[in-house]
Image (tube, rainbow, N blue to C red; front, top):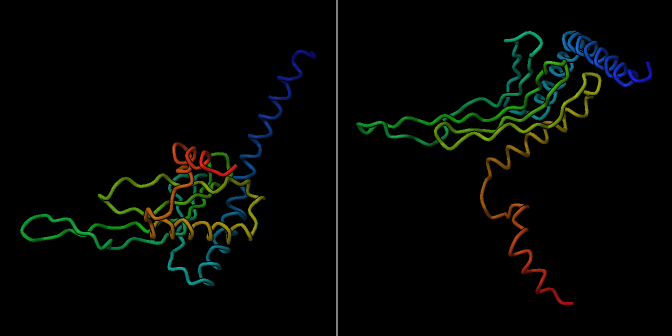
Length: 180
């Protein structure tokens, strides 16, 4: 039986994880969803963030609470002929609290995007939490991270060097010319 001890532990751990999934899904419905909505709405109201809070329930146990900054005219236009222009629409970005298949909560940022203007950036994952790990101070930090990412996106320019631009020739050259 000793040779099966490791396998038995894995089976027990697997069963515990399956039970956690059921527990986390129940927590989403009974408390987590309300905590997320109430905390985010309170923060949105306090800082006067022009956002709406949306609940998405298209698939059971894969629900989401979304801080959505909406859509708007991007200010860019596409000529369609006959002197007419078609406005390009801008998605302003969102902060998403997504219930995962296992009941945990994924927090991610969807970046702004202008239709027909490049490809949208992939979402940025902030963290994944067990429901009991979500505490009120985290929501403020998530919103701050979200706002900083939006500021960076909106204020994009190439004046600031990327952190990885310090590698390669220039870095080697700077090291060689350092006084010794």
